[in-house]
Image 1: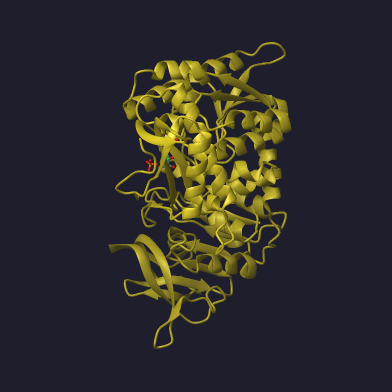
Image 2 (image 1 turned 45 degrees about the vertical axis):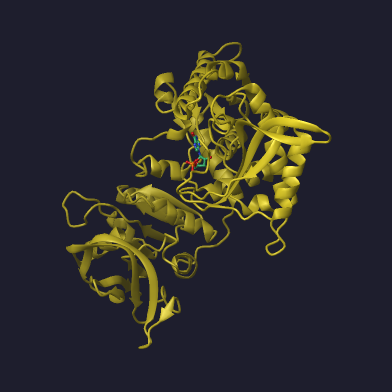
Length: 535
Ligand code: XMP
């Protein structure tokens, strides 16, 4: 195993993720663990190496964190990253100074000599024959004097000591961040460290993660009871499946159906969790309540507020019942959430020692406190693609785990203006046809379906009527817009160049099969300036 000591950088979990990608087991612990803790941790001989993370702090300030000195007495390789390099230099007798210029962003680093860490790893070679790395830097302070026994491993014009190594003791350190994807050779460098230098065994798989997570959940929960709000989305589904694997009937899922879900979505969620997994799921059919409160409201933000507010009210009422206990139940004491690592970073709670934060776009901020429940968040350290992999390993269907994202307010923001049941029913059927055909059409060049080639695709209901002709008759019916985008982060997005044959098939089917819609348009707007959703 590899021990990652966390000095509070936002990207510490990315280091863990890269180590997992090398199929090596690792754990992140706060940097202020004691020397005794470190020695005990290494005692069984399975510890193969230590990685010291970055931080926001300055190493030469008195109050800031140091690595436990015992790390340097274990005889295992140590890799310092950014602040981790600075504290390593400081603790082993080198010198660190505050930089006059902060270096932030892309940099080209020259790799010196042949260290076991960087040997034959380079992005390009200069005409003079120097191996160069394209990296991501983010630091103010820098090492200005190597500790005894160390040699220079890398440098940039503004950071002469950008990497150092003591190969006799297997200590390595880099000022740049190998864990971020902007550092092109980052994964290669971390693989080199954990696999070659530490000689950790690459035998870790997602299945092992399940066993570890199950053990942790059991320990945390004991014989208490847990409530989880199931939405049908990837994160809450995977969290539910994982917690159910750990504690079975001690978990109760509450699934609030607001009547604005996609076609058959509610039934599919029930079939999977109640039917296949035999989990306890309470389905609350609140569609009349939601549609009633939405009547006459057409302003998008007002609609969002109503949906979000009602969702919390309905969930709270159910949770309060479960908390109170009853026939054979002690009452719930935990609220589980499918918070994943990017949510933790977004809400500014990345430092592991800090208090937990809640997914803000789920509109449930403060809910655990209000309900007097403890939080259980078993996916807090995972990235989206890891959550998906975990879902598959837990036996959830591929279609559920690799689904496009769906906004909390659901079809409520895909029916422009006032939301009516009639509109929602038409939209659900049109949308199901679009999604079905995206699955049916495969791109010859990549062999992938158009569903997999798009990041998000859906249908929008426009409450305007246009004239059409069908058979011998004139029609006067509603319009829908198809929306399909490609994006990596949802902050910017391009409209997808779907094949005409696919668009033709979808429009033909919608107009023929969904009575009440006689016109289909395709949205060719990118984000920005348009947004992905229409409201
Ligand atoms: P926009 O429309 O802002 O969407 O380009 C970006 C991403 O966010 C999703 N989205 C929401 N998700 N509640 C959510 O949970 C919302 O109110 C909401 N609005 C937009 C949208 O589907 C897209 O993936």
